Length: 367
Ligand code: AMP
Image (tube, rainbow, N blue to C red):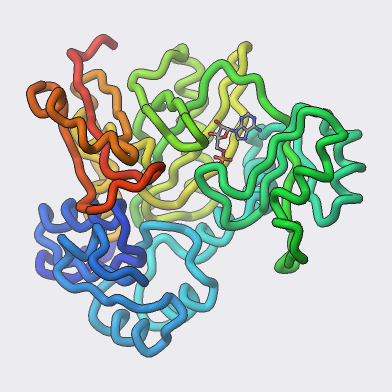
């Protein structure tokens, strides 16, 4: 295992709140950080040692960045292919492009889940309105149409309750404009799952292949965005073990060094259906910061720096609540509660729907 010594510099592509919390974890282990992203005065820039504000396609900025760091990791997966290829040619990159590439595209992701024997909701690739109409005879409504790439927090999605909604749904996701397929499928049609709950598992994998999973969190979404993550999740031990096994098989098959978050639906008969995955720290893993001995950010820094992963050792029950928009103006109750651990991202403008921070509320450990 190639171990970085304290004082080495970890480069982080992306400069949002995940990058900010990664910088803090890196600093705790004695590493310097250098963040790279397009926005000035970003959440990560405020705490990073060095910041480059440049477009991901700016090769001279990428060259200077790769020369200044000892390893590069990512706080998001939608890195342009040419930026990832450029960095890989000039420095060590963890995780590798293969993991990012699979997670950038819902079709590749679903094919990947099938390849590791993990179930997904029924789905069909869609490249045209005609495709969609045919697919609706196989994946019966209710269903959801999603763009294959670049969708997040419910953007690029349209629900289909009846086959007659097809035209409107297609218009919603294409915006009525011509679309590109990038050689794959532009969209996927997915059966709408009547789930009992949603869970996610975050797995960390080190250079020598050792894997450590955080236990599943139970996630509740509101307005297409994560609202709360609760641990322990209300699932039985067999289902929890099966969820952790899927995440373990996924990081192994991707040969990933770093973190992978896998989101799954749990049906009424405890079947796990994989929804999507992300090769980076995840909002549904923020609970680990205060409820575990080692959190998701430290595990990622350990993995990319060649340090050993450790058992995360959860010591409390926890509810993580996202602070969205104006929520951040009502912190007095949390500030007065010693069980509430507040994390703010340094964003000044509390626009509606903007993630401003989160709070982890701890309770004595029940199981
Ligand atoms: P996604 O962008 O795919 O993560 O979807 C965001 C959220 O929308 C999910 O976490 C679910 O709450 C809901 N959702 C997405 N796809 C489905 C589906 N096929 N069935 C039921 N709910 C879904």
